[in-house]
Image (cartoon, rainbow, N blue to C red):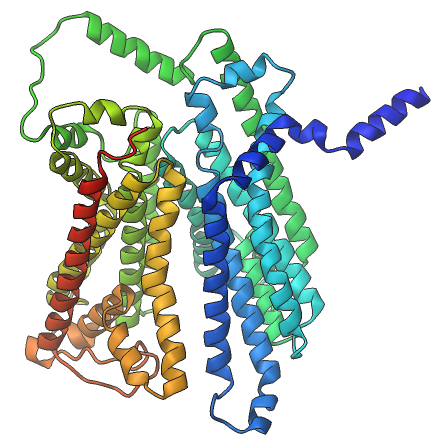
Length: 609
């Protein structure tokens, strides 16, 4: 009995029973991939840039030494807050991307069934994949610890904040990675996993709090009509403990202004998040076991619904009913246009998600109207930023996966063996990427149509936003197709395009701001920001929306906004200059996009295997 207890304790102490050889295999593969080292280097550069711009923004470069020393504590707080928030959002996005193909590669390469014939069980498969990717993210979190420890010496930041923020970030990363891994089991395409995981996280982090806020304000539920009631405060506290964004915001607020906000227990929050992650992983283990056993017994269809679809397809193929559909126009474009807008199991889940998104959007309109601010320009500027940001992210994901998904499914060589030219293949993939982004742009178009009809937005905003969407689509699609030809893995391609976008529209303004502060040339940064897509969106919507602007003639519209342009002196300009700025920006980015298309065409038939 004693020997049995010792063996059981020894098994629990050694983590090999949980991870198995899958974990060691993934670590060996990850250590040989250059993209992991590039990821760490880019992460450090972005982090250093954020810290530098915060430092220069708080401590005057040419001020006196006494004044600079008096600002050290403030600078320490701002730098720590910047680092914490940066790693909170960045690591969750990376977790979703890195685990988007964790199980699908094994499932669709028919190797899960082989793994089940070995002593490796489904728990070790799931945990080995999960922990191997999380270890790479833990290295990124470990990179920030020396910076936080050094900056804390400046004062104003407690060790409690560093510990609580690190634990909240880590549990949020585990939950996001678990969700992405679970979704990847039944989805072969990495972009589908990324989009669905982002959608679920967005609903969990933002839509759910918005719905509960509407209930608290309006009183749909009994006893929740007053926001100051005990029931409302209890519901708000519960929401805080299951929402990582709420939790990180609360501990940051307490660090900046101690003694404010509701009571929040970050150990309780972390325990709840770990519990939710455990539930998701337990379900993933069960599904992986079912799929692996089917493959081991020769049942290659992954789900019961998939078996029904395959059976129906075989029946339709066996029966000669109707004429064979002819290919009209470019073959790749014809094939991509025949695919549904949103792929899924019978498309039902995806369409349900789209309907929920529209209902949630209408709900936000209703909530904002209750505040009486639906006719304000800043509200429509916020909606414009939301739609353009979502459209840009979706465009990055779809364009970067058009070619790599063909490579991963081993159909790329077959496509290149056809008489199609490289231009025809790239054009078809570009059309496919744009078409899959149409639901997002349709939401933006619907928003503009509704509020133009209501008299809250000037019609010129449609023309200006069309120019913005055109050059953004051409540039991002060209870059995505180019990196798709350079890499064989979807994850690498997506990360490369995201890195390009961050370099141009995040790192570029930060470096420009640093140089401007050092040389007292803020006007150059202002001129650079005119070419930023987010700044252009906010300028368009702030200058052409609101009841004060919607009824003005074109000559009277004013697009100058010092709040947007880094607090610089106000520069009033009209619709003519705004159009020239958009056309000039569009010419530059469309030219760069066409260069990417050309380079993709040159590399299309290189390194096929």
